[in-house]
Structures are given as structure tokens and as C-alpha cells.
Length: 479
Image (cartoon, rainbow, N blue to C red; front, side, top):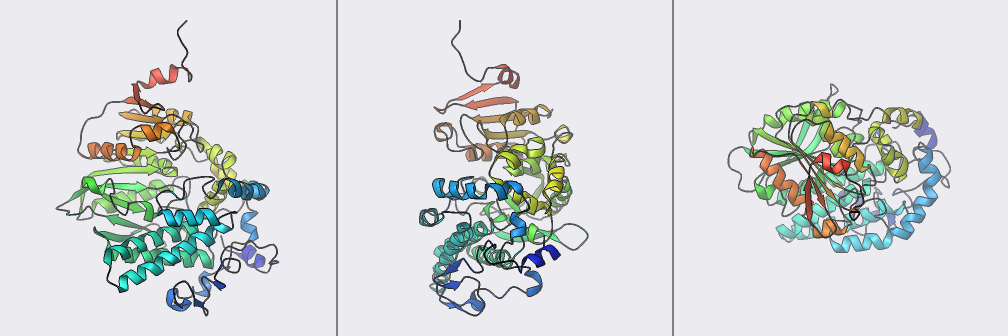
């Protein structure tokens, strides 16, 4: 998204600029990425912590005003967004602190009071974790080093999230993310391979990690984990107790078109290029000596539920596809027009579009019509009744277009993340259900079509899709 317009904006008033890290986000009086000053957090020079980013890849030092002005909704509601964050906290739109260590989560929650605080505070925690990891490594404390490098990588990735542009800080955070994860791989308790899968004719590639289960023997089944709009390749497999690894299943955690590092590489998402990526990635995956080419399945989370459906439609040999969280609404009006304005601006960044009217036309092409009908593998959709990103009705419409065996597990009162409801607390664990379901499909077990509703007490009610669609949403006593 860099260009002459951005270069002109670099000279705009500092009063107008929204400064994320370069000048406003300083740590103990020193810029986190200053090239000459010492880093009081890591106890060494900043050049030792992070080599300077080459000038030709650094169009600006903070997200320029032109980016925030690309979306009228983001610009108009910015004051409201800051007010909501001040009142509700950093998880106003999604559970971005879930799964992080408690001390990191508590510190970030206490220090983030507005949108501009997010990058600084996640980076602050990431630097603290990286410093601890280096100390543990020097002391030859392998497990402690492993854990802290892992958390540092995830925190650096979180710090990138609010930067919807290729900037020095975004590139620098990405470099630290990759470096810390590389150190995690060095000390991990299972084999992990960093992979680069060629994509396009320009020599670009899709980055990811192939996680193999412990004590791997021969070729093993694999799940390609397709994450959402705000997730990264580092979140595709858990530090400990990963539910797929524990079942002897490998995981490919990849950033596809538009996601994470791909946006920095200029690999933008289009309406259909996840299908192109799907063909290439599945061909690559089946060629790997560790992977059983006949036992590959898909897992899509959030926006990944849309992309995984596209991938499933172009391959007839997939063992099964499991979606977690809905993203099936044609045009994504709810996500782009009614949810937090950050969703739309971020997708514009992923699509490489800086004109909102052009993006609105592009959004209308985001549809699974004609795609669902081509899916031939068993399908599972797990979702919340009150999904704030996609109305439940579109989940039903999507599954009605699929002719193969399908299942739907709906949690009463749950949100897009299938959380924050009594049904998710008292009912079956959705991650465990997904892992067991995928294992059954990879083992070739038959599956029957059914609809499941988890009520607030945790009881699962089974029915047919026809019965569900014809029933009233509120049960009444018989007359």
C-alpha cells in the first residue's frame, strides 16, 4: 500500500500523525527500534537486538493518516472506538488475551486504554519475554527458554495487528516474531519445520510451519489449519497439549494470501486466490515424506471458515473439513459494516486496496455460492448462536448447499469465538470435539448428518436440519 500518496503523507504534521511505535511508543525513554540507542529492556544495544530495517523496505515509521482515512467508518468512529476500549478493555472485539500467560494478559489489560496503546503494550510484553528467554538460554534452561521464546513470538505478532500498512515497525516486529519462533523451534518438544511454499510467478511464497507429532513413525495424517483474519501462523499449534499432536496428527499452520507476513510480501487476498493456494499447498503437502497423502483434512477458524470452504471445493481427496466460527455471509456486511471498524480496514490492507468504494465492490464478490455445491468431503460447522461476525442463518444456508454428510454444533448464546456463554462452559469442549471429529474422518469412519444444539446447561439436543429450521426460536408450552 506504499506509493506516492504515502510518501507525500510522510511530511504531514506530527500533530496529525497517529504514532504507534516510532516516536510515541517509547520504552523507558528509548524507542523500541531505535538503531543507535541502548535498549534498557534487553540490556544491550538496539543493533544487537534488531538490525536496522533496510531503507528501501521502510516507507514510513508509523501508520500514516492516509491509511486511517481510507475507511470512512473507521475515521468517523475512531473516537467511539477509543471510548469503548477505555470502558471495555483491549478485548472489545475479540478474545485476544485468551491463552496468553496471566501476567502478560493482566499487564496489557491494565495498560491499554485506547487503540494506539495496543502495539506498544504488546511489544513491551514481547520484549520482556524475549529478554527472559535469552537469559534462560544462557543458563541452559531449555524448557524455560522454549516457553518464553514461544510467548515472545505470539506477543510480537499481536503487536503487529493494529498496523494496517507496511511500515518500519511492522517489518521490525515481524522480524522479531520470526526470530523468536525460530528459537522456539530449536528448543521445542516436537519436530517443527519452517516451510515456504511457492505461490505465483514472481518468486514469492507462503510462509508456515509444519508441526509433527512426538515419536513420529512413518507417514502420519495431517490437518491444514487455516486461521482467521487476525491470526498468524504461530497460533496454528499449541505450545503444550495440542489436541491434534496428542492424537498423532501433524499440523500445517500456514499464512495464506493476505494473512500476516503475506501482506508484508505483497501477496494480497483476492476473491478466489485461496483456491489457487489450496491446490498448490495440498500438492506440496502430499509430496512431503512425513505426511500420508491420503489422510489430509482442513480446519478453518473464523475467516478461515470461508477460505477453508474454498480450498475444500477444489480438492476431492480431502478427508474432512471442520469450521469453527462463521464467516459465510455473502459480502460480509455484518463483519465490515456492523462490527468493529477495524475489521474492514484490516481486510482492505489484506486485499491491497486503499479505496473504500473499490473495496466495497470487491466485498460483494466474497461469496460461497457455487462453491459449497462442489464440496465432496464430510463437513462440520461449530458456531455460537449469537455470532457477531456472521448471522447464524448463513451457516444454515451454507450447509444446505452441501450434499455430502454434514454436522452442525451450535452453542446457545455463544459469540463468534464460540465462547462467553454458559453453554460453552457446561457443554462439550469445542476444541476437543473438533479434534475427535477430525481424527475420525482421517481414520475413515462413517458420519451421519445431524444438527446439535448445546443449551445453557450443557445438554446436547440432536435433531435433523429440517426440524431445526422449522422450529420456533423460543419454545412455548403446548396449548
